[in-house]
Amino acid sequence: MPYVIAEPCIDITDRSCMEECPVDCIYEGERKLYINPFECIDCGNCEPACPVEAITQDRRVPEEFAAFAEDNKRFFTDPLPGRDEPIGQPGGAMGFGPAGTDTELVAAYDPRA
Image (tube, rainbow, N blue to C red):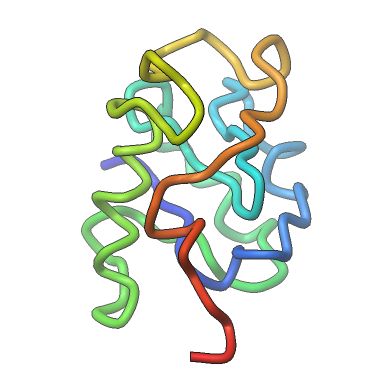
């Protein structure tokens, strides 16, 4: 089961989880980080490294953050705003660099709502 980064990461992006990931599968959007479910090896190193407890296994995502499980996958499978092609499986976040955009769910997120 791949891991998922949920709402508590929005506008925080601490990146501690990225340092702990042995396969470099945590990618940076504009406002949030995303775990590539096709590259994640389910080691769990990222979960305790997150200072805002935004990371869980996809099957254990709290109910209030359920939309983020599918949205995390969508970051890689659907073209993002301003991009013609999906990110897919580039083989590592370091070589790919920041995406500079987010999914529609994250882009529209209003912390005051």
